[in-house]
Amino acid sequence: MQITTRLEFDAGHRIPSHKSQCRNLHGHRYAIEITLSGDIIEQENTSEQGMVMDFSDVKAIARREVVDKWDHAFLVYKNDTAVLDFLNTLPNHKTVVMNEVPTAENMAAEAFRILQACYQDTYGNHLKLEQVRLYETPNSWVDAVK
Image: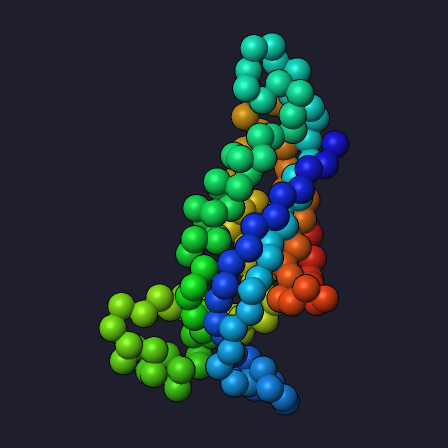
């Protein structure tokens, strides 16, 4: 069985070497979908009985580990020194320095890497992160899968 839940967040970024407009500072209303697989939990008298995992728990983990850190932040590539220098002049600015250029592909891969270890097989139901889908716009998205 597979389950999917969706969260949204706002963030800024730029693609420093992009041939077009994305080289400029800009932002997006991102959406992230987390897909897990596992067996339906049959353990009697548990809150999760009949579920793969409670959607509220899936969301809480994704918020804590990814969404709350990226929401209303500027995601900047570690070698984009011009932007890093500028952002450092802004007091208390929420900046996330990334090891890779913050493309949708790299962001989805990073979210997958972070979240993969977070969803544990607590109930012996073979719980596994299958996919992270990241929407950069309503019509453009990437899928990170193992």
